[in-house]
Image (cartoon, rainbow, N blue to C red):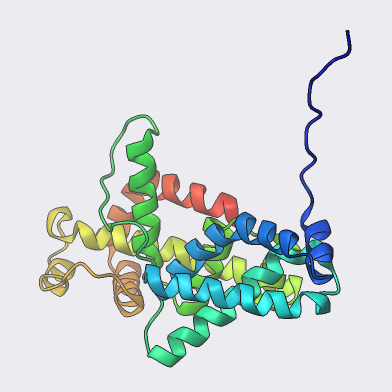
Length: 252
């Protein structure tokens, strides 16, 4: 008796879809949209901090992509090419609206402590990444978003950033160092009233809890010059390592 099992349908690669869409295949263009629209929306939300604005950006991305696909010389680079368009589109939107990029996709609440890496712990980790990211400059935030949240690496990351591979590696090295400083400053600042440094406690007594580049630099400089705060930062090494390793592992 002959088998009636339906053979599996082969999933087309990015390159195959890009070539077909460039030739006018609307079904292929739709397949690209369904494969990447959600990811690009998440990326744009991280930059423009607004769901509806991000959705508009994604629509612009695919309008541009539909027109420019015939010019894509390397179809296998479809993914970083789309992220590159999304980055330019989001930054143009920010420039037009005079708004600062921020990472608000996850609530800024976190609790550190021992325990299994459950869903709650993952959410706390994500919240710490979000909060520490606010202490980064716009360029570093963009690299963090692409490398950590979107998973781009190597040539794909360089393509999305519009820089050389060597330059992308240097940006990652800078980001690793700055992110660790930002995370350490954030954790120390949040506990300044409890860990015993009167100077830092007084300096952040009126802090509203919103972390930013100036706050990160201010606290990091204090930590470097204060043995008490530096010792406390080192005592948080397990917490810093938990977040740092999770992020930095994706940035290597």
